Amino acid sequence: MKKQKATNVTWHEHKISREERERLLGQKGVVLWFTGLSGSGKSTVANEVAYLLHQREKLTYILDGDNIRHGLNKDLGFSPEDRSENIRRISEVANLLADAGVITLTAFISPYREDRNFCRSLLGEGRFMEIYTKASLDTCEHRDPKGLYRKARSGEIKNFTGIDAPYEEPEEPELVLDTDCQTVEESARAVMDRLREWNVLEGGR
View 1 (cartoon, rainbow, N blue to C red):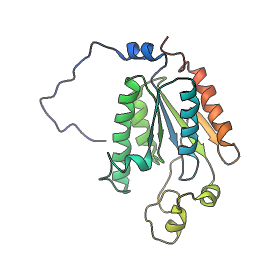
View 2 (cartoon, rainbow, N blue to C red):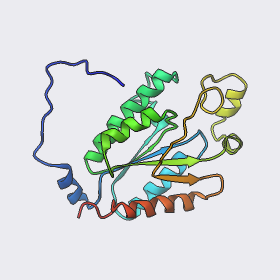
View 3 (cartoon, rainbow, N blue to C red):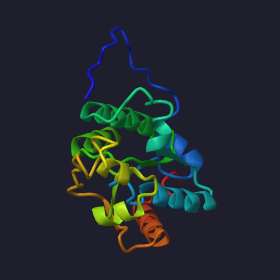
View 4 (tube, rainbow, N blue to C red):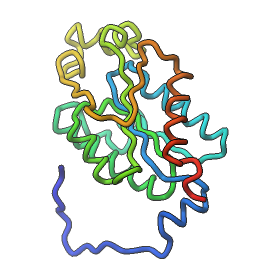
């Protein structure tokens, strides 16, 4: 991960704490980190969970892989180094949002365990939920909503995760969603159940 370059900088403590922001919102600020192959259902399930939470008047925000690369990370490609920097930046943003008391959902392939664990280390115990949207390569290729696997197979796209770049499966995720056979609604309900177990929805009061 990146080393500190700036000098003569001081961390400032603020009068309002995360706990006070959480009480105001009536929820716990956490990061739901959806990881899995392209086409495994990360964004689809994250959107459904955000919708269910919004219906319950909970404040959420989704950080989505493609959207972030249109702005904050538009200077990054898909080399291993750029992938790691992509996730480092997202981790820092997600941590800030969670510190504000927001239930933050991220949908990134995030193929490397070390990078995902960096975000876990930022958030600390009970505030980072790694959610593995597990689907076979065959299923993901069959779905191929963006036509990316077809382009990767033809050589048009290089360093594509699952084809010519590795994906390191989570070893101990907080939740595994078998999106080969689970519907979007079933997967979203499983996430909601886990949020209740963690007292996220009542965490601020």
